[in-house]
Image (cartoon, rainbow, N blue to C red; front, side):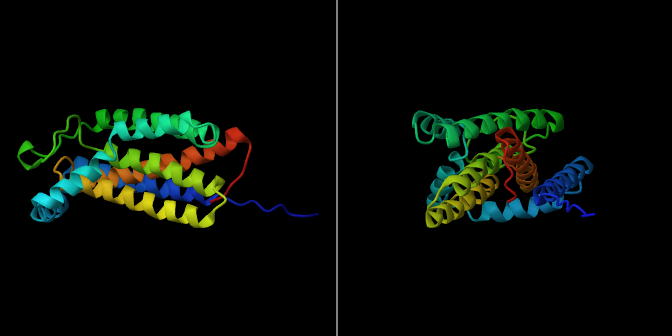
Length: 213
């Protein structure tokens, strides 16, 4: 009698780890224990400011705005070759991520840093960072889809590196421009990673496919 082998998709493990990280940061914020960590990182970021770097970082942070996400969705949906494989899943997952992070912000209702330290205007609550979460979801799903469907491996690897750097840069830029605490970014990244991996699992179930990353 043969014994069947059951394997667990490692994405479930990463989802669990990301959620634990988010829960830990959220608990730290609620207890006030992250204040010293946030203060040190923020002060170092503010000390790097200068006219040229300010313009560069502001340009980077705007790449995480909803206008950029919507533009990318419209382009992918408009082109027949990318509409079904890229445009539709990108649009649906990005929209779901936006709704989710806005709901989470309302739950924690953490005020943003003081107006005095900001070099751009921003409204709404601070935790988790919507830019950080949405970027890891929106650009992350593009990485997933490109690696899944692009036959040119060199192009797929290049896109993976560039989009990954963009995710990191946008998250860090939010602290630099003074609209988020570092723990907001960590919370956004961890929650975004869990959301992204769950979205890829659901995507494959809907398509009736298995694709262990």
